[in-house]
Amino acid sequence: MSASLLYLADRRALFMGTPLTIRRHVLPVSRMILCLEGELRYQPFGEGPLIPCSSLLLPVGLPVTVDSSEALIADCYLDVCGFDYAVLRQQARRCEHAIYCDLRDEQPLREMLNAARLQLAPAAALWPQLEALLNPADLVASAEHYSDPRVEQVVARIKRTARDNLSVDELAAGVGLSGSRLLSLFKQQAGIPIRRYRLWRRLHYATCLLAEGCSLTEAAMGSGFSDSSHFSRTFSDMLGFQPSALTRSHCELKILVNPANGGESAAISTPPELAASSFKCDAHGRG
Image 1: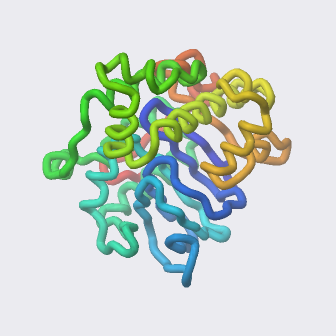
Image 2: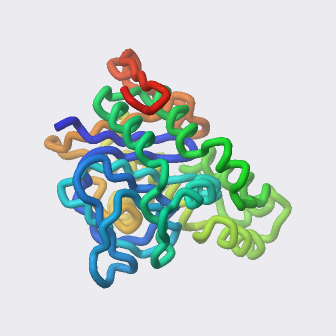
């Protein structure tokens, strides 16, 4: 079986492979989960029977359990401002418990992602093709979505300064708002508290440090956590498994960071042996 892959970019993150052991957790950003092989099931709010599906679109902040057993999945963490989510939900064949299921045009996406996984596609090749399939022009034009430009500016600043852990008042002052007004506006727009999003971006940066070969302690301290225990608790709370799972010698997980990333991750590039590989996909998403 191919190694699992974790792609990190400025707007999104993408995991492909057999998931690590996952417990019930609350989503830090909205997610699209696509079954590549096997069976995908979910349990809304962590209660009731497991419901089968071929793909899921999960809103931010929803407590959910996803059971993929031994399946291969593509798990895409979408942009925090909600544009991807607004576009993709138009494709859902059904909606249950605020969860959109079974996207209409998922097959081209499945074929492209499977080709990327099998060919170990470099990050710079994968993201443009994924962008085109997540946000086709016709659905972009009809998407009902508004993002306050002040929130977008704050998100961009948090990305640039993830390890600095700027205060809410500092972030608010940069866009001419009070701290309390920014707290309210960010929650309204993004669906999560700003403090939780700041933690998410620090986890993103810490994972980039792990990709560079840093230890858990070095990644924790380098991304602004007080210690490795705080980092591990936050990681587990948001993602459902311990970060130590990413560093175990038997864990076949490759982390690929987009060399075009802005902000704190800009210095981390795709490993040379991956950058040299090619990733080809035809108009129908086939490799």
